[in-house]
Image (cartoon, rainbow, N blue to C red; front, side):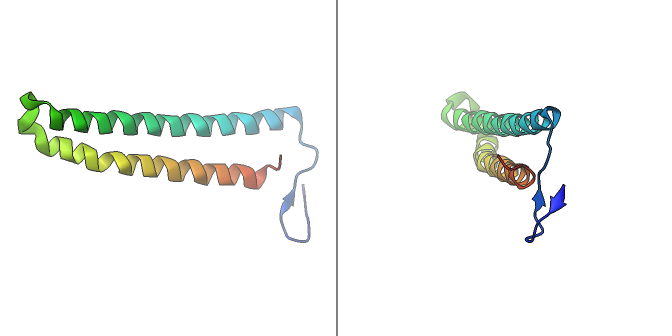
Amino acid sequence: MRKNKNTKTVKEGLITRDWLAIDRTRMANERTFLAYLRTFIVVLSSGVAILKVDALEDMLDLGIFLLVIAPIIFIIGLIRFLYVRRHIRKYHTS
């Protein structure tokens, strides 16, 4: 690899193994984001269920806690996804 005037790395001579590694990294990033999304949905729905079911009214604090923590989980997952995607694009030009 060599550097151009803007000190950005210029990709030269990437072999098939390198391209496949980049694709695997991209797919792993997407899978990780989907895991965060799945966790967000489960935590959110659990919180709603606890608040709506009358038999669980002594657990209202847990339901509220789950409703508060669910968006935080989603935001963390989204930020990590965008951060890794930016770094993948930084080192790979399509």
